[in-house]
Image (cartoon, rainbow over all chains, first blue to last red; front, side, top):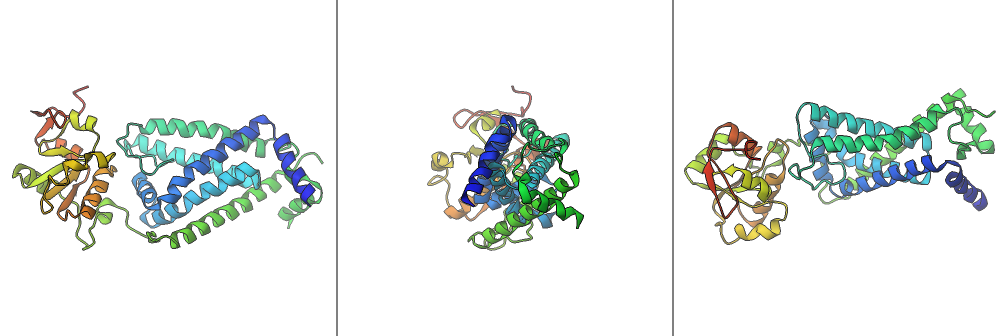
Length: 177
Length: 182
């Protein structure tokens, strides 16, 4: 059992390829880092969410409570390489949603505080919305690459951990049910 | 079988995503419950709603009232923006008390402004919370007549009310506002 686990992780490190591994580690670290300040200051983050003026009032508190934890969970799963299809899907979806929200507000001339990494920074600290959009676009590159590797390649991750022995067979039975 | 059916991946992506979202929001809700300053599940986050004192009074001041307080010299205005923004232009009756680095500017308030004085804080932009944070801090310091002029600088300028330029030590009266001075 222990040996199986060791092999599992060793495969993950060795077989992803440098690019996919780097992309995963970068995104994982960024998402974990981004979640911490928001988890510590939910009220300030709720204000940031309100300021985006996109979500209805009824969803703002829930988003402020849950979204930072989702970022943390996704970040951890990306780092350790479990639940790949799910974590890659969510990380890509989240980045696209953030990107869209910022572009939307940039287009309507609302220069708000991004709330991306720190809830305490203020709207007057000089960084314009366009910079946040650009930065988010940069993070989309590794996310979309991982998404492509996971879903669009015939083989997915080469030797993905899920393709081991009986595990693969089990996974394949599920959609057929 | 070298290839893996796409359906299998999509299925896994779906249940893994649902599992992670449920897990994260469950932790988030539990974490919130364990906080002393927990958030209400549904709350009004608009500035007017969140800016109310313990007694339930709103801290928001209207532009008309703020104008009267300034022109009649009934209130001290505190500009919570940075010294640079303040120097470029500010409300005529304002002192600069930047919220960022408030500890170093506190001596412009503490012992200088009497506790029963009317104070109006402002910054700039619909979503700027500097003035709000400053007002709450002043309230907790014992100042009980603190008001916030939301999006103060922009609205003040748009209404053509008196402004000044220059920093705390050097003030230049004039109508020049933002933009034209570079």
